[in-house]
Length: 478
Image (tube, rainbow, N blue to C red; front, side):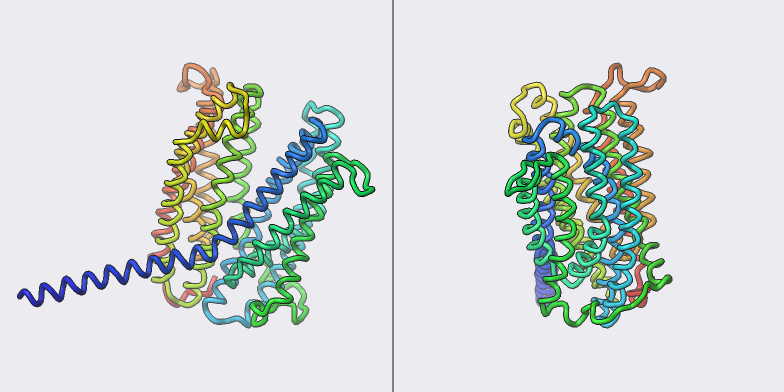
């Protein structure tokens, strides 16, 4: 009796150790993929910071023009990034299935898709810039904003094709090249800004327009640089997509679009909601706007960590499904989401504890710092839900499910968050249920907490259902 009890205890202990070892191994594998992506994402954020700070040193009009142009351009870029993400799960499924010979065809067709979608995005960005015609802007600010969109839009086809190579490389577990090219691009962007904005090395002084030229040239450098790395690295030889030429295949391009368009709409729903909130807060004056931008900038910086983990998780889940192992995919999903949420909890506690110090880094204005520190507390509240929603949505995309997450995001941001934000932030007189006075920026940030929580809960339930319905025989099928 005692012997059987001892044996049972020993088996339980060994099982516990085995599970712990599997979790540690999965976290390690996830982090090996994620940290170069994180460095690359931070480099991209650094480019935006360099653009704003260097344009601001040129003149207030240059800064305003670059900021307005970037607000339109970034919505298009983020949407385009989502549309092109269909490459990641498709390639990773084939890699997991050991069907390397099929990867090249997918990448070639995705590049055709990138050229088409990038050209459409170029036109769309220029059409969207017409919004400046309906804004009361100084002539100099208007000119810079329009020129910024016109010039940077020329780089959108290159950006779309770069995201194809980005997804291809990440799906092969090769994320360090992405990091290196992003860091080189950051350095190039700073150099080009210095030369073109301020007119050094014999170039004309272009101000904010020079920032646009620097951004456009960096988009093309990203594409050429990553291609050059791939051409020289042996890691891509077994799947090299440029050993032959093929014309676009309507069926394959359509399937990639069908998979990617909902992701693009999802990204658009989130980015446009944040942009609209910034416009709605503008009516409350410079203090509220500045505080909103501080809180948004810092929370966006912190968001790069769960986003990078999410992109790595997409690859891990897709490869397991391609290998016909839905149990491994489910295990990787759970560990990945739990890791992201755990790290977000730490960042939330730090943000709440040092909210005043963080605000003080951005501004010496006591009024702005006071409002910003309060908004940073709101940002700390949604760190966990934000990490949960981005990691679960990436895991779900690993299953090639994209339409349901789109519906959840649209519901969370456009049915819950924005209407609630308008009620709390604006307190319109015609609303029967409204606060006694407008809560201004704080009201919108409370609504963001609600919207992100709704998205996190909805996506967690969807992931649970999708993971349990996955079958070994549906690994690489659409």
